[in-house]
Structure formats: C-alpha cells, structure tokens
Length: 247
Ligand SMILES: N[C@@H](CCC[C@H](N)C(=O)O)C(=O)O
Image (cartoon, rainbow, N blue to C red; front, top):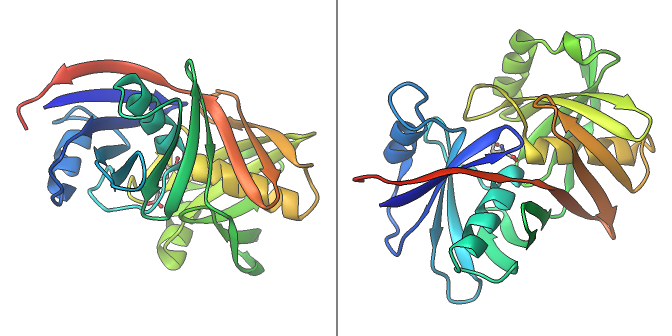
C-alpha cells in the first residue's frame, strides 16, 4: 500500500486511498503509534463516492472514529489533488457532512461544517467555558496566559463532556490556541476544529471581527473567517514523505 505522511501545522496524518471499505481502527492504532508505527495524530483513508470527489474515513491516533478533523481536511485535500483524485477545488464526504476544500500550492482552505452552539457558557474549575461543535465538540476557555494550560483540568473536562478542550489567548485580532485532543488523549501541536471553535466563540462574543489570525502551539500561522455563518479555515500543509507499506 502506498501511504503518505502529512504535516498540517503540527497535526500529523497518515493518508492513503483505496477501493476497499473496511474497519481500519486497529490499523489506525498500529500506524499512528509513535514508537511501533509510523506515528501520527490520525489516519485518513480516501474512498470512492458516486456523488462527491471521494469520501473519507477518519481515525484518531487511538483508533477511535472522529466525524471531522479540520487540519485533516486540508492535508487530505492536498493529497487528493496531488494524486489526481480531485481537482484543486473539491467536495468530499466526511462523518460530519460535505466539506469543500481549495488547494493552491501548499495552502489549502476548507469550508468547515456549520458551527453549532452546544450549551450556554458555564463556569467550572475557576474558568468560563464555551461549548460548540465545529464538526466535533469543543470546549473553549479564554485565558490571559496560554502558559496556564492545565492538562489535568483539560483531561477531566474532556472526559466529563466527551469533547476536545481548548485554551485560547486573545491578542488584538489574533488568537493563540492550545488544544487537548480527544482520541490522541494529549495536547497536540494544532487542532483545526479547535482553532475554529476558539474563533467562533470569540466571534460570538464580539472579541474578534469576521476574520482572525490563529497561532496554534506549533507556532504556525493560520486564518479563519466567517461568512454567512460558514467558517473558512486556511493554512499550509506539507507532505513529509511517501512510502510503500505491506498492509
Ligand atoms: N485534529 C483534528 C480533530 C480530530 C478529531 C478529534 N480528535 C475528535 O475526536 O474529536 C482537527 O484538526 O480538527
């Protein structure tokens, strides 16, 4: 099997395409293992689809299925275009719905699924939390110092609410974001739907305008904008390597 490893601002993925649709949860665990496998935050498998350019299966590092992955959509779109599975502007089916992505060299912009507010804001662990779905559920708290990211609190909130957990610091029209990711069960270097959730929560509170620059902990720079309640997420991706594995 021909596979590619992608880096999307620190969120890394193993990607391949096939005609065979089977449960790849165990394979995802094996391939994503950073000691015994290739190592990645997730596995993305592209499959043919009659209506869209393709559909995907997305697995987290631990083999669990996630309905959406913002950074994964950008890496996957680049992979699809590079492998002539789709034109530069494409539509593909994910567990959360149809995604549109546009590839321009190494920069990919994705229109994410329509964001949904999951609850009123609430206080817990001395912090104010905003809860929304940007394809997968995310808790967001705004802090003065991103260094106060607390993995123990993040993990506790993750299990209590079955959500990813984000700490964000606002700086003018920019957001600095750290995310504890469900399915990786640790902080990752970037999470696309997490950055989108932080932007959307800030936008709803009028803390940012209709667009903002986002800095995940990897230090990369991405952008988010909202148009007619639709979130557009843009940033670069890199193919790290390609290889052939006996799967
Ligand atoms: N890294 C992703 C999110 C992947 C899914 C998440 N771990 C979950 O299970 O909810 C992104 O870039 O959005």
